[in-house]
Every structure is written in structure tokens, then in C-alpha cells.
Image 1: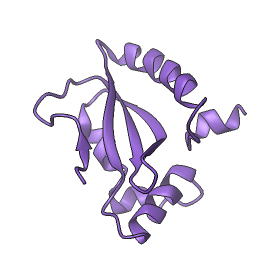
Image 2 (image 1 turned 180 degrees about the vertical axis):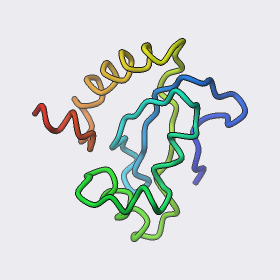
Image 3 (image 1 turned 120 degrees about the vertical axis):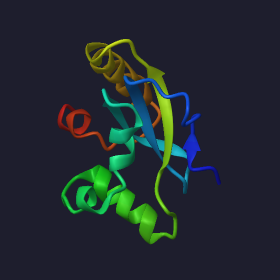
Length: 111
């Protein structure tokens, strides 16, 4: 299965992205980045996954333990500024939370 659901050469600096569980093909985390895909790809690095207690990290570790290399990555929005990423991330979290069980900390705290 293709790991990236975007064209790596066509990534804008300001993005909102999703992490997808390859086991059920559902988005489980929505994030934003003002540094292009660098932030998105950091989620799978060992030093990031050591932070226990985060639902997102636990889900990524479960995905890896089930034999997958990593979650899938998808660009959900390209933005014009860092401020724009905050607005779009919130809107996308609201939209996806209706049909997906998100692991976003802020989203889960407000429930």
C-alpha cells in the first residue's frame, strides 16, 4: 500500500494533514505544520513515540506492532500562512470528529 497520499514534490510550507490507520483506513489524528511535511513525518520517529500517555503515539505504536511500517499520511489542506493552518485545522477536526475517532489531545479534552 502506498504510504503517502500526496505528491512529495508538491508540498506547500503551510499544511493541515491527517494520519491514517492502515488497518481500517480511517484518519485518527489531524495536525498542522508551518514547515511542510517535516512535522508530519516526525510522528513516526522513535524519540517522538517515547512520549507515553499520548493517544496518538499509542495508536502509532499499535500500528507498528501489527506489522505496518507507519501510519499513512494525507495532506488535507494547503494554507497561505501559519495562522491559516490553525483555523483550517480546527475546522477539519470538527468535520472529521463526526465520523472518525480522533486522538487529538485538545479534541479529546473538550469532549
